[in-house]
Image (cartoon, rainbow, N blue to C red; front, side, top):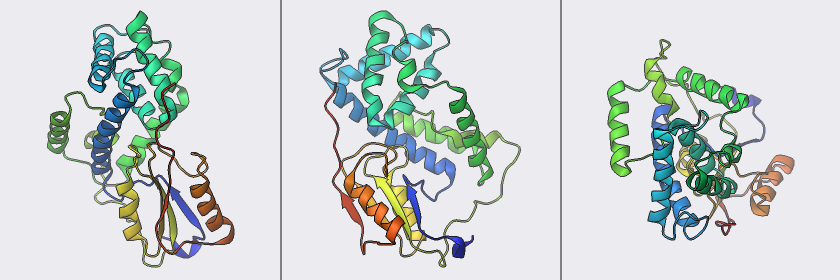
Length: 268
């Protein structure tokens, strides 16, 4: 809206330019792929099973047990939120796996709670604010579309991670914007976009779509990485150096930059 007031801008882990609900659906599918990656990563470790299918079975057994008998206010909804938060950062995978093992071993959730800090006042406030922003930013989804998409997702996996589909609540809000807040401007200066190749929270497709709306923008992708949040977060010299050179000196590459990523660390 104010392109001449923008100097050097960097957007890290970019949300796509679609309606929020459409973005949430895309994210839910990416989380299914990420969870399968987690199952394969944890196989043979943590006492959850030697094969990805066995880790998945352990995971489902924990959730089923919490659904039948919540532990100190920690039930299936809290479990899903914990998994949602853990899947987005690979450094949280080991605490999640240890938490699953603890639930299977002694039925407690003590190891799972601190692993993701799922119920802090700050996180509750953030989640509430996030829903308000999404619902105020564009038209709500239709209730029939929500049911249809959930059924499609369950056909992909009977036990999906739907916690992140926050914009579905917008169908029930009294404040219903008629149109989406516009994004992009031909007068906007070039913007640096940074993305992780396998980020399930803000999939890389979002950064590529935003790039098409911002002429002259440059994309920096961290390959072989599965976490959300890249610049000054993943400790990658290629990403950090490229972005810092732009912010400090205005030095911009002429094409997309692909930085070699860390891959998945070996299970602890």
